[in-house]
Image 1 (cartoon, rainbow, N blue to C red):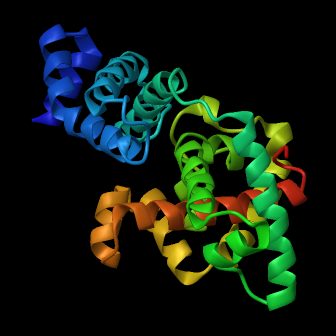
Image 2: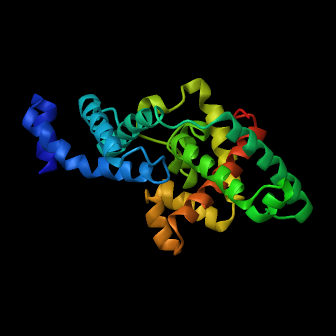
Image 3: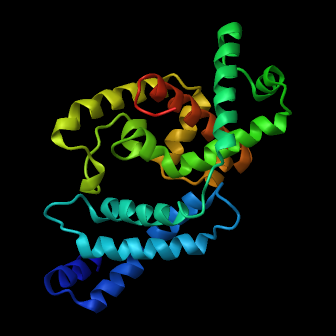
Amino acid sequence: MTEGLWQRYLQTGDEAARDALVLEYLPLVKRVAGRLAVGLPAHVEEEELAACGVIGLLEALERYNPSREAGFKTFATWRIRGAMLDELRKFTWVPRSVYQRLRQLQVAKQKISHTLGREPSERELAQELGWPLAKVEQVYAHVNRASLLSFEELLFSGPASSVVSGEAASGGEPDLFARPEESLEMEERRELLEKAIGGLKERERLVLSLYYEEDLTLREIGQILKVSTARVSQIHAKAILSLREKMQEAGYVEE
């Protein structure tokens, strides 16, 4: 049935076929909205994200060229996600003071890791900094909130899952991939990320894989790991922070 709708729409631009395709792919919009909504500010409603996602879906339908693009679902996911991210950027703002505390946290983490020979716990970081434990957790919460919006933008030139899974990026939105002269940098970046991901704790790697490769929400990951959504969010934030530090050291991400 879907194939017939596509033929009608691509050949004639039939509006009824287009509307039927929109209904067919609405679950994809809801799925992307559900993933982005978890851990974001309370004033951002999932329904608002979904509405923006529908606009992205319509744009994907208008611009999709089956002879040039990858499968429509992949193409549409990036359009839908992009439309939602544009909306979220209007509401999500992290104060400069948070970045200053994040830098303090990074310095303390490096110091304690060198002394202990392992990654410190949140409580050990709090003791080193003279902060209440809640303050450390708050910084990680801000990191996670920002990383849900900018993980691909900060760390990747293509889909995050292509690096998490160790596969070369292919398909998707053409604008998301580097020009030919940037291919060497892309490959170096991808290799660095693969190595950095490999150095994460097993649970952190699992959370990244389930979120970016398996397309699960943080809530669904929590059910698998038998921990709260807040705990998954914290694990995700710590993994992102570790990867970001590696990218900073290599000069791919500004401090």
